[in-house]
Length: 188
Ligand code: HEC
Ligand code: HEC
Ligand code: HEC
Ligand code: HEC
Ligand code: HEC
Image (tube, rainbow, N blue to C red; front, top):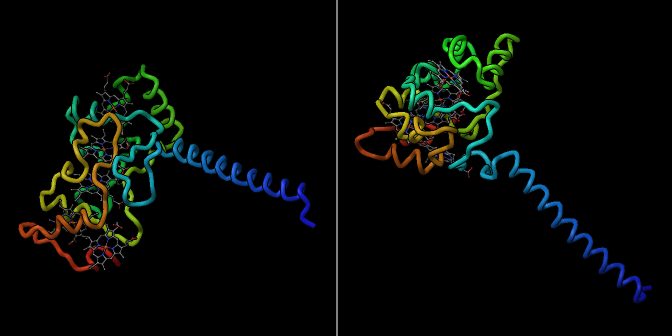
């Protein structure tokens, strides 16, 4: 039943299987690397994550060079639970006139004229079981940079903090912060 040739083919086929696995793994890791810039490892701990965006929007240029305030664009940050990414109409306040000959601005204006929006890729993402509230932090005077780093120097946004539970709790624990530590503050 198990002749020499059948053992040989069995060996050969398991070798093929291993090669196939290695190939598939390599292929899939290449694929994920390409779609995620190679840094994303799951929701939460994505320190350094900086996905490709549909347009090369630069905070360094807008905030660093042109001194536009964060809240001119992220105008819900103090009022709502969520922060927000500005709508195209906010960009158009300036880009109806500014840099209209530049390629990305042409794209921006076309999208606006067609009633479309720009599909920005989310950088920061907490798991669903965590609730975070910008309003509470901003009103207490915690600066954007404490959590997001020097955004005004970023040509491309990246995740500065690791957004782990330890990171949140360590700051809440500082006596001067008088921040709540009970589980239900952050978890439903
Ligand atoms: C001129 C408008 C504008 C200004 C001013 C601006 N931003 Fe942004 N911001 C954007 C846009 C558009 C995006 C989405 C594209 C991107 O991620 O680069 C964004 C993305 C972000 C993100 C990442 C959001 C995510 O996906 O998780 C953070 C954090 C952020 N901004 C913080 C700031 C801070 C802090 C300031 C001030 C120091 C600021 N921004 C000023 C337009 C602006
Ligand atoms: C308050 C005014 C203002 C707002 C609002 C604004 N920008 Fe700009 N933007 C500028 C200025 C000024 C420049 C620099 C123009 C130059 O160097 O010629 C610029 C440059 C740019 C460039 C680079 C163009 C190039 O290739 O040189 C892009 C892309 C851009 N803005 C995208 C956006 C997007 C997207 C928004 C909305 C989220 C936005 N801007 C909102 C003022 C603004
Ligand atoms: C105490 C830390 C902390 C501070 C201070 C803070 N942020 Fe955030 N920010 C976060 C966290 C955490 C998230 C991810 C929230 C989530 O996924 O629900 C986030 C997400 C964001 C986003 C993306 C939200 C979206 O709708 O996609 C923007 C934009 C942003 N912050 C801007 C700001 C600006 C502007 C300031 C200052 C006015 C600021 N943040 C201050 C921690 C902070
Ligand atoms: C740099 C310090 C700092 C970090 C980091 C931080 N917090 Fe806070 N947080 C505070 C302070 C200070 C308060 C107290 C605000 C108040 O009630 O006056 C607070 C309050 C809160 C509240 C209560 C809000 C309310 O409505 O009373 C929640 C929820 C919260 N934080 C969630 C988080 C989560 C989730 C993270 C991590 C993703 C986080 N915080 C990271 C400083 C921080
Ligand atoms: C200040 C905010 C904050 C408080 C308070 C807090 N957590 Fe969390 N927790 C987080 C954040 C943010 C995450 C998601 C990131 C992570 O997994 O580290 C998390 C994640 C978790 C997870 C999931 C871990 C995993 O591997 O997916 C568990 C379980 C958890 N917390 C339990 C608790 C318990 C129990 C308490 C009370 C003793 C508590 N948390 C208090 C912010 C908080």
